[in-house]
Image (cartoon, rainbow, N blue to C red; front, side):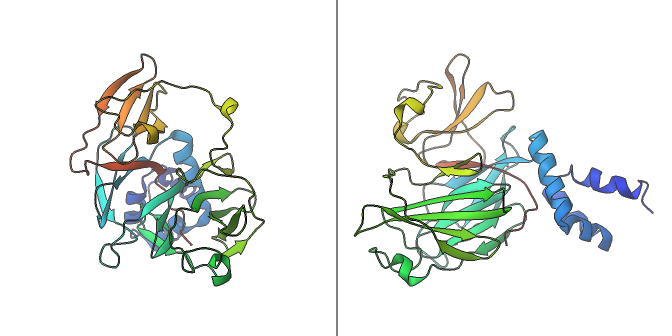
Length: 300
């Protein structure tokens, strides 16, 4: 018999990391059912987001094809874990890349094999269906997902319909617009929507999900606020692709990623000094990074 009242158990369990919860599913059938319950999954995610616990830094090998992915605790940069990727070198010669991250799910793109929704915490993966032929016939690429220089992607969550979605935009060869299709996790289908008439730079082609919408660079200079000033030195090699990954818990440092040329670096916002490149033992030396929160959210 449990020493805790039954109604206290969910409140205790929702504070634990995913790895521990997956082990606890074997304790008993009631615990297994509780941890799989959608209400508990939401409670666990809400607790992690509220407390900024269970936040991981995903390390994507930028140097070569690697069947493995890596992650560390974002605050401490310790506890390196290694796990298999959705698309491995056994089936393809190309590398996959991360489109975006939300609520513990990562959207992964591969130029031959397609797109997958992946939860690295649960090791679950769902491969999205291919696009219909008529959607891609206006392009040099073959029907499906094949990448060209006119492909723009984004991943996010629709709070209204409670649905995870992937946006794919293809620049038309015959018209001055982007043809837009949206994948819905709920229906597991792609849907064509109205063309996008705006000119979106394709050199930074993955959208950023903020405030329930996917955003790209709009080209409006007045909308920008200067956060810090960088100069090319020994730790910022690819300065034109350098981006902010996230803030430290105290808000005084920002983690900068130069786009896969090397490991990221902390930058102090108070005195505008660099803490130098990170050196995470066991991790690839050239990585691109993204933040995700450990969760039990289902990939399908």
